[in-house]
Length: 285
Image 1 (cartoon, helix red, strand yellow):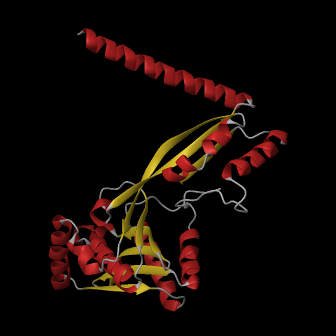
Image 2 (tube, rainbow, N blue to C red):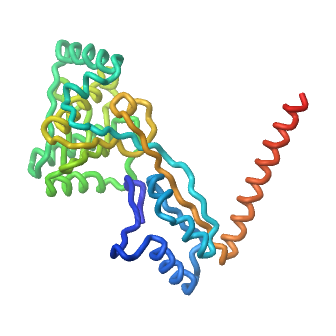
Image 3 (tube, rainbow, N blue to C red):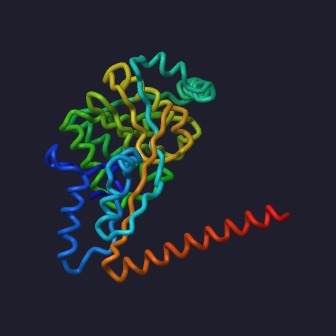
């Protein structure tokens, strides 16, 4: 139902009359008749609010599954509430604004820089995609397991008119790039990359400021979403946070499901006993 490029998702009801619980029950009735049976279901990157309100855990437990939800990541986001960029930026932490101001002055004086934002298909975008790929390969991030995915995503977003691919050039060289996907209501900050040679110049932060300005003042979105992850720098730009959870369900109709569930419960009980013993010892002391 998802992969590691997925930001968030949920079950889709085919009609308003069919609840998520009924959909799950239908899936499970199919699973019980199939051979081999599924041992495990693991739904990832699900909003906690969806977990709390969808009754999926109840449906899983009512269909012979041992099911629990677990925390995965934070999802930082910003609700604009009719603010323009000037007002929004004035509310950012002083440390962030001072750093950008100082670094931008140094960058302009000693190196020279230029920011371009690519939105449409064409030779310019093809060149920008190559520059983004080169930057990513020179960044701190792990290599992409599927090299064609991000370039094709960029082209698809451009075809749909929702691409904002920002690149900052230092001394004529592409130094940092960011992929933003923007709809009428919301923009998603999907991918960031920075050539480590330019990291100390805060080229990525300067580019971020410009992309925030475009999203707020030109695209006039209502929400900016910083995607999946709890990186500290996101707090400087964002104001609110949601939790992303997973739902893990083990099939109690299979030997694997029974075994793993038994081990999992035993570990939990052992952990509880250790905690109670520790509290008893502390109370005695």
